[in-house]
Image (cartoon, rainbow, N blue to C red):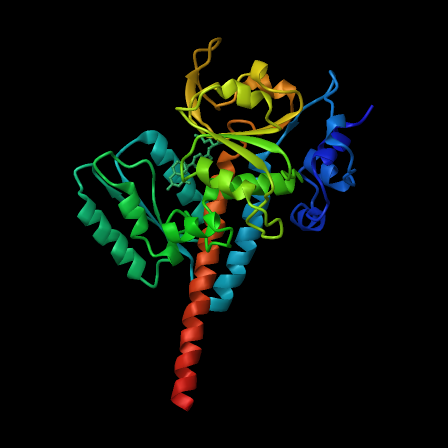
Length: 367
Ligand SMILES: Nc1nc2c(c(=O)[nH]1)N[C@@H](CN(C=O)c1ccc(C(=O)N[C@@H](CCC(=O)O)C(=O)O)cc1)CN2
C-alpha cells in the first residue's frame, strides 16, 4: 500500500521546486505540505495511482501559504524602501457600494498596511461616466508616485471595463489585465504582471509540488481574471518560465458547454471559477482528483441558518480528492498577496527605469 505522500509525489514529475520551497517554508510550519516536499517524487506509471478507501485528502492551505509569502514581501519591501527611499503605492479605482466588493478592497488596504505600502482608494458613485474615470486613470498612470493601479471588478454595466483597463499604463497594471500583459501570456512570453488569482493558483501548485504535465485539467469559467488565463498558462509548454507551470491538456468549459459532467469525470485536476455554488459534485469526479476552487458564494447554513461562504465545488467532493483548496482559506487569500507582490515588482521596475534614465542623463552630460 502506498502512502498519501507517495501518491501526491507520483502526481508530480520532478523535484526541481524543492529547494525553492524549502527556502520559502524554512520554518516547516506548513505541516503536511512541508512533509510532501521532503519526499522524493517517485516516477511511476500514473495508472497505478489509486486512492485507498481510508485516504485523507490534503487541504491545500492558502491562508498559511499566504502568510509565509507576506513575510517575504514585507522583508523585500523594507529592503527596497531603505535602498530607494520609495514607498510602493497602490491605487484602487472603484465604482459602486457593494459591501462584498468593499470587503475585498478592505483586504487590499489591510494587506498594503501590513507590508508597508501606501494605499489610495478612488471611490465613485454609479453616476460617474467613463470619460471621468479614464481621466482619473490617466492621472495616476502619469503620476511617478503611483506604482500600481487596479480597477476593482465588477463594474456597473454602463461602464466598459475593457476600455478602462486598457487605459492603465501596462507598467502599472498590477492586476495583469491589459492586453500587453495578457498578450504576453497568450504568446508564452513572460509578462510584466500575471493576473493575481491565476498567479495564486500557480503558487499553491508550486508549494505543494503539484505538476500538471500530461494531466487532463478541466477549467470551469472563461474570465480574463481567472478561467481563460489559467487555462492558457497551464497549457503552455515552457516549464522553465517561473510564471508558467505548463504541459496540461486543458478543457475550458463555460455556461454554453454541453456534457459538463462527462468532461469532469475524466479530469485529473478541476479548477473552477464560476461563482455557482456546489456546481461540481462528488458523483461526477474520479477518485484522486485535485480540486482547485476559486468560486465564492454566500449560502445559508441548513442547520444554523447562518450565512456561510461556499465554493463552486460541493464540500462532499473533497473526500474523493487527493488534495483540495477549501473555501474560504484556499485560493482567495493568495489573490491579495499576489497583488501585493505585483505592486512591489512594479515599484522595483519603475525605480530601475528611472535610475537608468538618470544614469543616461549623467552619461550624456559627461559626453
Ligand atoms: N480588479 C480585480 N477585481 C477582482 C479580482 C481581482 O483580482 N482584481 N478578484 C475578485 C475579488 N477579489 C479581489 O479583488 C478577492 C476575492 C476573494 C478574496 C479572499 O480572500 N477570499 C477569502 C474569503 C474572504 C471573505 O471572508 O469574504 C477566501 O476565499 O478565503 C480576496 C480577494 C473579483 N474582483
